[in-house]
Structure formats: C-alpha cells, structure tokens
Amino acid sequence: MEGLLSIERKQKLDLLSHLVMNLHGSLVLQGEPGSGKSSVLMAAVEQGIDNSDTLLLNADVSLSFESIQYELLQFLNEKYQSDNRSIADVLLGYEKQGKNLVLMIDNAAFLLAGLSNALVNYAKEYTALKLVFALTFEEVVAKSQSDGLKNSCHFIELQKLNFSQSSLFVRQLVAAGKTAYIESDVNDVFLQKIYQESTGNLGAIKSFLNKNKKRYFNNVLVLMLLLAVVAILSTVVSLFLWRESEVEEKVAEALQENQKSAVVKSLKKVELKKPEVNSNIEKINAAKQFKVKSHAVAVNSVIKSPTPPVVQIPKVKAPQLASPYVAVIEVAMEAKKLSKNDLPVERKTEVEEVADKVALVQEAKNFPEKKEALHVIGKSSLIKKIDDRAWIL
Image (cartoon, rainbow, N blue to C red; front, top):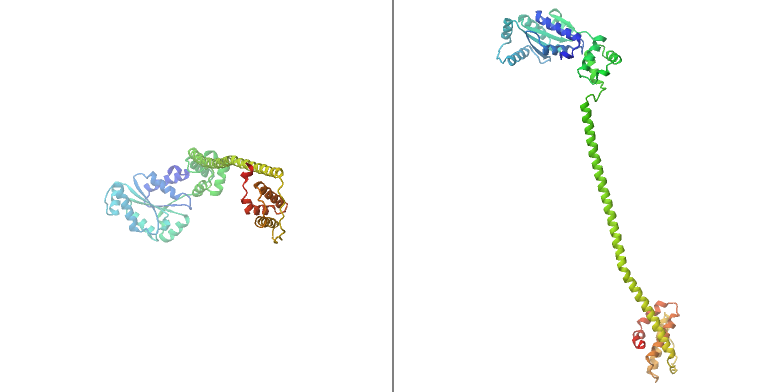
C-alpha cells in the first residue's frame, strides 16, 4: 500500500509517524472524501511505527468505550500470546517499556457523541495510548462542536494534488499494473484529462483509471488463452457440422440406393414377365391362326361336299325378342326340331352341321352387337355340341 501512495501522501505518512512518537496527545487526519485518509492509515499500519503497536478500527455506531478496550486487549493477547485482563495494566506496562499503543479510527464521524472526547481523556491519563482519528472537514466541525476535538487534538491536513503530483501518481499506478492502461497510453493529453475530471482527488483518480478501461487484453497470456478457447470451440462446432453433413449425405446415398434397387427389382420383374407375355401373345396368335385355318378348312369342306337335298321347312313366326341374334338362333333351333320330329328327312352329316353353324355365325356377325351375339352363341347348346376334332381329322 505504501508503494501506491503519492509523494505528497508519503510525506504526510512520515509526518504522522513522527507526531505519534513525539507528541503527547491525539491526532486528527482530515481531508475531503477521497483525499486518501484511509490509504494513509493503512500504509501506517503496514509500514509500522517505530517502537509502537498499531491497531486500525473502522468506526460504526455499535462501538462503545468498553468494546474499544476489548478490541485492544484481543489484539495484544493474540499478538503476544498473553492473557491480559485489563487494558490499563497493559498501558502501564507499555509506559515502563517506553513503547506506544497506537489506535487509529477510520470514519470517526460514526462514533457516538462524547465517545471521541472520552477516548482523548483516557489517552491523556495513559500516555502510552496514542489516538488518530480520520475525519473530513465537515466532520471535524461537527465533532468539535460535540466533543471539542479542535481544542484537544493536533491536525494533519491532506490537500488535493496539483497537476504535477496527480501526473506522478497516475504514472505510479500505471507502472504498478493496478489499472487498465499501459505506460504507452500515458501522455500529456491523457494526464490533463484525468486532472480535469479528478481535480487532484486521489479517490477520483483511482476511480477514473479503473472505470474507463481501455486495454482489455493487456495480458498476453489471457489473449492467448482466449484465442485457444475460440479455436477449440470453432473446431468442435466444425466437427459437429461435418458429422451432421456426413450423416445427411449417407442418408441421401442410402435413399438413392434404395430407389435404385427398387427400380432394378421392378425392371427384373418386368423382364421376368416379358417371356410370359410374349408366350401368351404367341399362344393367342397361334390360336387365331389355327381358328382361321380351321374356318377355312370348314368352308372348303362345305364347298367341296355334295349339295345336300333341299328340305322344305315350314314357316314358323319368330317371337319378338330384344336381341336379333337370339331370335335368329332360336328360329334355327325351332326349325331343326321340326325337321327332326315331323319330317322324315335324312340326318345331316357332321360336316354339314358344321357348315350350317358357320353360316349362322357369319349371319350373326352382320349385326351391330357383335359381342352379345357371340356370347349367346357360346352359351347355346349348338356351339357346345361342336366337336372340332372330327372335321380336323
């Protein structure tokens, strides 16, 4: 802490140490808020005062005269591993040894009214006890009215720093690495700006140097660590994205292969069915050719066969049917029955019967409803009785 004090504050610290050792009475360290009173007191405790034990207390409203005595006893017993029961006995022992017990109270304005005066009077009784109060200018006025400090204490005043003192203090803090700036950032413009904003107040200077952070990556190790973390994160993200894209490509390839295999299987099925279709087509064509040939043979056989005797068939009125094909066939059937039962006609040969049936079929084809006539003929008993094998042989 002493190394972070300005030159002017170091001088005040030396003055404080000198007065504590040589004056008989209490001291008041006064200055405006942020002038460095607390820093000077802490530096005095760390540096130490010759031939003295120093205790620093931060005042609050809970402090009392008895609690302050208890704090002093605890401090001394812990330091010297003793078991003292009375602060008065300890102070008498300090006087015999020529030593001092220094009690520094920061923010002494929080002490209860009259407590400061009681402590001052107690220090007058036991000269080994030295008191130092830290107060602002306004607090000094208030305590003087309530406790009469102006009449019983010596004052050390902390003034504001001038421009040169402020510049030296800024350079000192920057060189110690206690700010966000480096030495190359410190120039006349920078120092002038700090002085204008702080008006030479040490607390304001420290606040400015810590608040207005310019150099975020002053430490090279921190920068390298951050770069390493960014590189690792980017690598992890890239690997994740690469794996995801690879999985997507594999899925797409699998889908394409499945589609290809499905197409190949369908083509194979088509190829396997082709011979059957071709064979069926060949069978149908052969049957058609065979049927045409059989019809031709039948016609030729009818033409070549001797003309059969003319049979007089009585005329019978055909019933009115919805389809002319059915009417023709039924008339032919009725005529045949009559010729068989009523007339002593010689029975026709099989070739003649086939010729008659072919003629009926040809006559039925002349009607517009071809499919229906063929269906009726196929179901009729005349067609069912046709035996193609006989005339083929």
